Length: 333
Ligand code: G3H
Ligand code: 13P
Ligand code: ZN
Picture: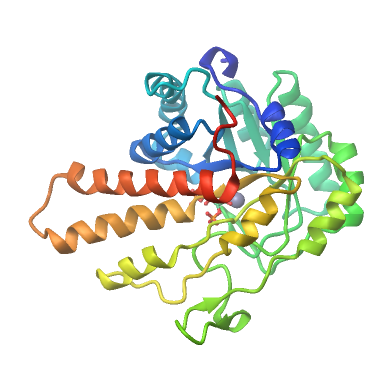
């Protein structure tokens, strides 16, 4: 058993309380490799933003959970080396799907876990979430739960269609499970293709897809039922068109990739939404930068010469999200 406190990590309780009162949101960035982690920590340290490092089941399989945990521990020291005196870094399991995986992360030094029972029948979601909460809270590890189903693929959890969170269920769910935060479904989804072209309109000038707005009425109703309760938005990448364009003009093929417009996330960040999950945008930044080097310098074969520019591009992206979208800069001096 390793306590996250010994590793210099923090749970989400205080971060979320401050974010709700302050009208901003904490960035939750997924990481799978060293370059992503370096970029996240550099951006957070330079902006003094609290940050949540997220590890998915896919990341654990790809990079090994032991290595990822030590990387997170190293990230705290790296942040200090960068001049961030009191780093506020949370290590979070993204989309845990069983009690066992959540327990293993708690025992292994994670400071927060998500139990995603959103694909289960309501009562089963409650029972599973409650079991995880009872275990995690013994070690002061915070728990994110999910109610409502996002469109698309949630790790291994296939969702045929999106089901918005039902506001009439949230009080019962939060009370009976004891969860610390609630991921809701209001129209976001995972990946770089969040809406089908037929769900969007087209900008007559650029020909680009304009997605439908998020269901802010559902968010408002949830906030009315659970005043001051931390709400989480998954699937919140914006799919920057400049990256999609670079990818498409440098040998890639991502037609009609579309995300959540940043002004909608800005609006959400000012509400009780205090954690905003971003993964795909970082993948796009990385891929665009690597493709550019491959096309412009076909003789290059030193990975540092293409992973380096990719890391710089991701740092730029993370800082942009922190400062221009979530407003979390300067909140962890
Ligand atoms: O929620 C999904 C995250 O973007 C993680 O994706 O399962 O491919 O690591 P992944
Ligand atoms: P995106 O695919 O929109 O980046 O969402 C990531 C996410 O929700 C991770 O849990
Ligand atoms: Zn997610």
